[in-house]
Image (cartoon, rainbow, N blue to C red):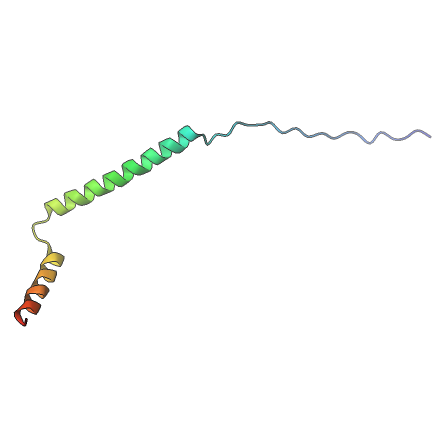
Length: 70
């Protein structure tokens, strides 16, 4: 009686280097910082282009009204 050949099985995993390196993390961080700075500059430009400041004027008017009664 001979034993029947069942075949064979193997697996292989190719090791890949880490694609998310410190250099990439630094680039992503720099990009986020640049985006934040751009957002602040857009906000500053919007504020500079305003002719009036309705919220600030409302606060000042409220303070002036309250100070009349002091």
